[in-house]
Length: 161
Image 1 (cartoon, one colour):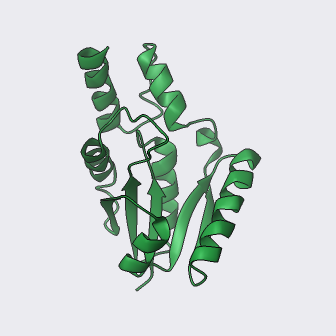
Image 2 (tube, rainbow, N blue to C red):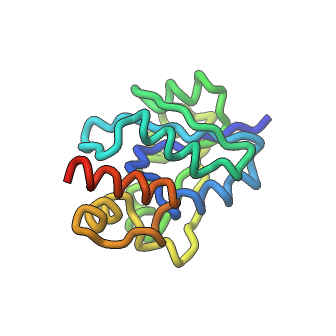
Image 3 (cartoon, rainbow, N blue to C red):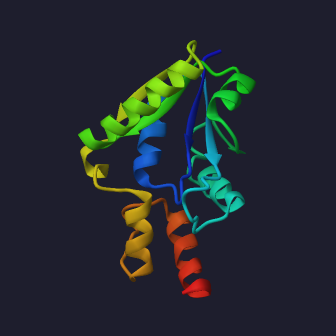
């Protein structure tokens, strides 16, 4: 079985992330969306909330499951016996960053490759950070995120804003 891991903070998951999952789910037998607690980023959604939002957003993908983890990705991949890391690319700038990460991961775990998937052009400008900023400023992000995420953002704005 070919198991791949799509790691990220996903705060929140966007339509761009879902696009990458839809593409990669056609290639791998199983994909784990590995939601990490990123200590360098202040999260809007808790780890549990992010996991639930992704689960809701990927119900249509039967071979995708969601898990939370902390620590080194290399250890997580070894534990899950994954064969690949999935990463999405929007722009050349993404590629430069992701290439460095892929080389570091290759050094740590030589038997696992990073597979890059290009997002559709309609998603190249979408980032979780931009979505959060737009939502915080009252923008309509409904076309940028799954409906459940839009509802979650609206709830956050009401309760925290």
